[in-house]
Image 1 (cartoon, rainbow, N blue to C red):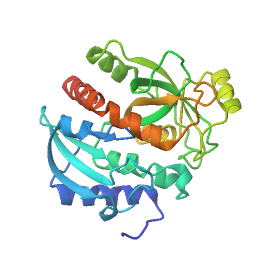
Image 2 (image 1 turned 60 degrees about the horizontal axis):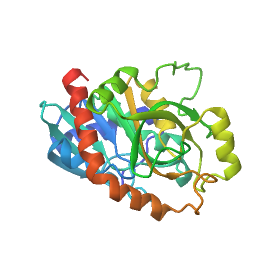
Image 3 (image 1 turned 135 degrees about the vertical axis):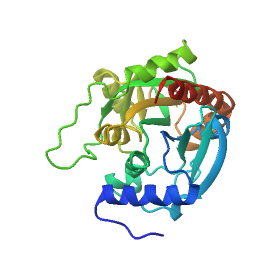
Image 4 (image 1 turned 180 degrees about the vertical axis):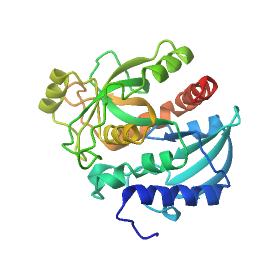
Length: 274
């Protein structure tokens, strides 16, 4: 385990330096955080040239959440560009602080990424959606009462989830639906009353990740694409109790479809100029 650095950006640079040394790749043009149900995408993106265990990289730990690999991968895509696959995500409810939550994003920026793809497994509020359905994120509600930005640094989030990248995703799959993602702190699932609140505020998707990472990505100058796998309908909409094994089962069932889809979208982004 590496010592922690009190400067989160210096820590991210240290992490990027270790990744470059361990992988032999000096720049990763695109970075992808793989949430529940999305990990098979790494196998479809291209040739894995190196893998690094998360605890071997400054600031990273193995996630305590089932469904996350704890491995960083360098993948050579068909375009010849390199993607950094982040299989180690820290959630706010793990208690390590906001800087730890967004460390992967800041490391991606320090590694030279221009595009950050954030994926997750989440609950859906749209009754027409079904478990296993991928949905693009077009905006978010951050209900964590936290921000990764400290001090008078005023970052515009108007086009946080890039319209350009969503258009490229729709070129790959014109039938992809989209929605507004809502991050709550977790780790408990939302109550039916909280789900009704989210719906009244305009939210379509509820989860426990992504929004804080997206904010940090924008601060770092990255263009963001967000995608949710709908693993279940939210509390009060779904009639059965919610549980994490259900999320994992939905993710496993969808992996064979999501992996190739995400790989095609990422390759389309690199073709268009990441």
